[in-house]
Image: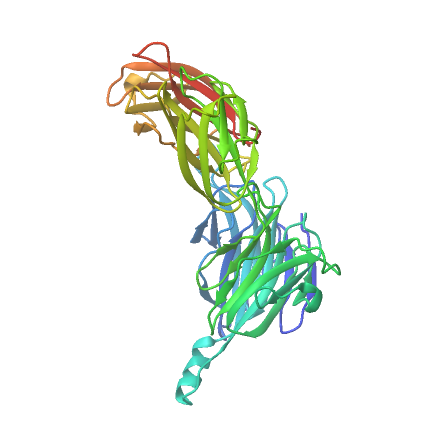
Length: 460
């Protein structure tokens, strides 16, 4: 099955969307070299491999761009492969056979989804900065310009105007650098190197700012690609803007982007609590949160978050007091742990992107009585006496982060560190592809055992 679309752009730029089938036509005559780069833009897929023929060029995770490689202007087969759960051999997601032209830059973009993958090939003239720098040095001058091209890999964002101006410039008083729809590449424009702000608006509507970046400093003698992409739940943003240049990839963040916070109460023996932010005792951030439960997600400003934890309705007593740094656009989980009289708080940012091939699961160690524990996440018929733990000596107050697992039924087992002495579980886990879940190891009524709390990370 072949899907083909061609858009001719100025300055030798073009775009081709190619399906899995393509013809071959190699005359074996080498006249020069073209450069190859890959970009992973599928939110629901984990790591992939990008290959030319049978040679691995790069392993990429979502939003990653590879370095560039030069190849003779011949015909090659390019493909993206993925290793699916329980497989020992990679599966090709999509591939194409393409004649490489000399002095042309190709960006192979894996787009779409796992069910409906697309291979988008962006082509444009390759600028030789080394030659320009050499010429400038010979003439005792300096290269003061850079270039930037524009791509759109988000179907949801639609057709947009993109502005690239001095920070603080209103789009109402500027001209868009480009208007761009899904899968389009707009050829590079030359600008003076310096500090710029990226603004994105719906096409023809400069008063509706969908995105306004923090300032970005761009060096001279560089070729850059500004790409609009789906975010996939990595941040609270509706879409991402990715700057791909000499540093391979940099996420730009909206200056107005807010963050989210969910609170989990795991401090045994402590009744319902209020969580106060910034000394606003009249309006608790989270009110009347019961033990062994999690709050709804609340919106917080990025920056320093000063919190006080008090008994519910009794704000004259402080159970815990902490300050945390909240990064822009992040999902955060605040764990309350400890025993009566010694409540503590720990904050962790979470990546909520869902991967269609795997389940993602994390464990937070909140059992005060055990400074470290070993954690097993094993099949229901596996004897832990015969294997090592998934996580050795997980320290009190720390998280494993999200690990990827093949979908299926598992047991979560907690033992004393460096022993097979079970102190928690086995707790049954049904891990489903595309879902992110978590657990919190808790203290229990027994001083020699732990308890556990489980939650859905994507729907707090």
